[in-house]
Length: 154
Image (cartoon, rainbow, N blue to C red; front, side):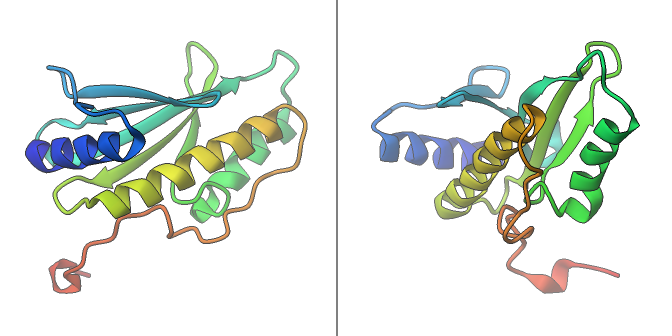
């Protein structure tokens, strides 16, 4: 899996004019899209890639309604384009994360997932700054689904 994702990441870098974009020895790469830092990490032997970013911090005056907005966005991933939002219990950071299946990841799938992730992170930053709650146009568009449906078991 690391070889596949490394190849996809390298192709992505080439498409952006960043030849030689690679993971470090720990399986990490950091990117920034305007004001959105995106951290990419391999998740051990699980053949998954974690994308995550910090959307901000829970304000000191946050009430139940604030937390309810975050929970509502997470409900069936309706407001996150397949990602999830959580609050770190110690730091109070509001983080968004998306897990991609690295084994079957293609350049096109990675680009689509990354764009949806960054767009949603920008929308949530606006929401947390006082704008409107984002809505995902297609909650499955960010997910890289397996091509072989026979591998899924009920």
